[in-house]
Length: 151
Image (cartoon, rainbow, N blue to C red):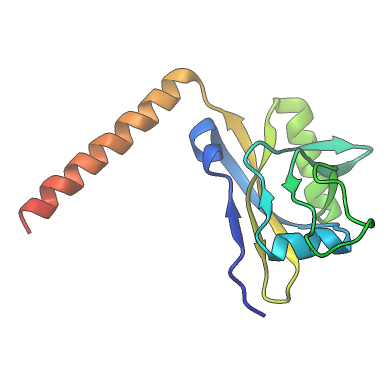
């Protein structure tokens, strides 16, 4: 199976500081996995939330499968994430006590053809942290240009 699906959340690195990363499975319907394999998914504005000690990804958009009949899925439905129980307990404790959030970083298809979601326990950046990130990126770009001239 061709493993070329790699959907990233580009805004997450700019808006959040990552603390821990986890890889979670996703409980999907048949048309959802087919649409993801076509690359028709978006995790840019999604987040994760606990509901009855289970973790769900909210606001993840998976377009309707083009070859499906009236049994197609809802594009913005909540999708359950599959993690080990001890990881779920640890994440839930961190989210409730520390005020951290869980953000999806990357949606991909693994070697066995299963959809996986890389999530991260994250802390929101303040405006001055975002400015610092922009400044560091621009200075690195400037240094790379100068080094390229002297090679």
